[in-house]
Image (cartoon, rainbow, N blue to C red; front, top):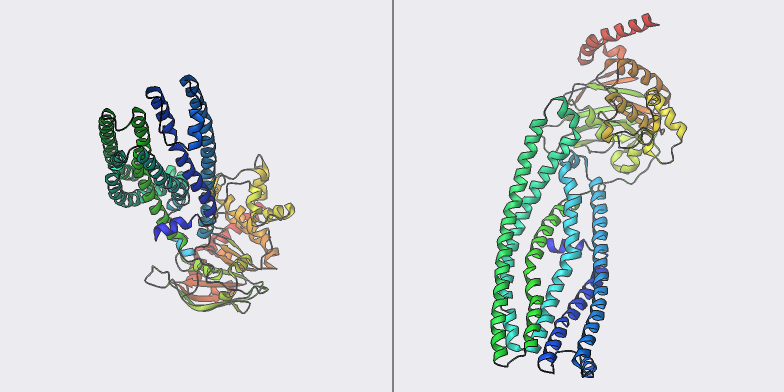
Length: 601
């Protein structure tokens, strides 16, 4: 099954592979005649005649030269041109193999990366990034290398042994059995080696994946590591995984060394027996000195390719392990298999009806029988304690996940019936932890569409209260944002992410605790600037700040996965419950802040 999957990776390139295999066979066939040139010279120098297995027309051509000096020059010249033709064929073979390897790697990388993008929210929540990176790089290279290099080498081995054996057989029938005598032993040892390799490489790949994960996490969280002066702990963690990977690889290398050593001993033993028998046959006038020289040269055609079977077996084992790891992802169900087809005009009415959700690996539902309605163009704040299920509501609305029970309606249409890409394009979502790309500030804001006008980008930056910060940068909008936004402060990253969402007019705007990283004054500036957008969009604000939630048309209070209250600020702060408790704490701080602003004015 794994072998079939491995071969299937070359789908669309089978004709290309066929051309390569034809060149391989021609190359080994033509090489089988090279030792015969040496045999012919030896025979002519010693005996004055030769029965080298050349084509008749070529032997007639050579026999036309009576002087041995002329004959040697002709043979040498002919051999040079003959080898030039062979090297030309080898060049095209190598070129086509390299092209095939890159084509397979590119196609498979595109396919795997595209499929990873289509996997569901729960998969991406639990997968290790380092492991994915290794699969998209190392594992794909192992597969493409085997298809483009090792399969042709295996055909070359068969062709080499076949044509070499035929040439030796034409020289002496007994010598061919001596030459082939060690091949069964080598083949059997290669089978045992393969069984070991198959298990060994699985362990090596898993160890390398763990090591890559540690490296990726450390580089991503470099600032946090330094903030806690935790460098030594991370170094020790890497050393542990590195040691595990190194030990697994060294164990494989020891087994490989034993295999290669045994192969060399068998090869030398086969040469020794062939030389002894060959010398005896020469002394008995059973073969000529030229023939025994040709046999020894042809013997190399048989021994060294068979010895290389171990390398092919090793790469085959690694390719099969890599195939399993690649198809482990490719065979995962895409989230778009369960997709709607409708693309209704969205006004922004949202309705949750008895919605519950439980994560696959959880014992208890995080949302329980949630029901509420949001009218078009309405601004709604959702507040609640950490872990109460606020973000899960947003993930359900955007169909990152689907309800365990209940239904969600957008303008009266069940979201399960709406095409997912279309549904998500109707929403502008600012996450709690914004992700910025290693591009310019301008590109990060305009990334939602290549057709965005510059004035829209600047207006969005102004609404998000990031315009003044950008103006202070040496290169302004062309300032390069470091990987994951590392060159910006937390508040600046958050505001760039807000600007990115505001560039286009969306029927629904969602702010998932996205104002938490900005100060209260900036929060107030952004909320005031957003009022223009709120007039054309349904706005959902998830927040812990009562001061942010206070101005909403409606406030939804979530406690322990349930809706405990729905109302306006004026009704909720007078009512006993979570909102009143938060208001009693945060309301005083807001009043002090407003009093301070009046004094400054």
